[in-house]
Image (cartoon, rainbow, N blue to C red; front, side, top):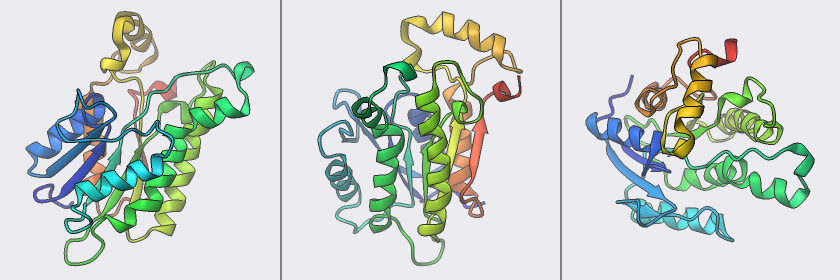
Length: 237
């Protein structure tokens, strides 16, 4: 396992939830961390709006800023940005499907395209990686989630093929189950009750628990094309 100390991580979506927990634990391990969020009010790092008209240009600008124009390359890029909003298949048209695919599918593709220019790939101790965030719905169907399941599953295929195309850069995915974050909002208690009934462990995950899956993939220099699930056994019921 490679030590965290001295490694440079960019966490997109790192100002809250799982991304914030990854940042917190990485800092505790001695890593240097940059975080990026779509809201300037929530971030003490960089702002990137992946919902704008040109997400590729926004990502490229972010990566250039974080690395000083490539002079200080990153060791790892972790993408936790995105909010899964289920849309019934009966309400889908091509335009809606394209827009819903932006964060879970098109943005990861663009990260795969741009990342090699800003990641450390040479020299002793090189251990560069990209980590995407999928979800349990890629492994177990949930009523009403056909569209999101398609994108979550596509991330698995994308990561495995990018692991081939971008080697020696490692590409992996974390697939969390229900995780108690700010996204639950005012429905927190209702969601938590449902999760308790579905989980073999009788509880939702905490962001800190899921964050350990990301750090495992950061440190394990043998892991590429891997899907790491953290779902409390929900896919087994």
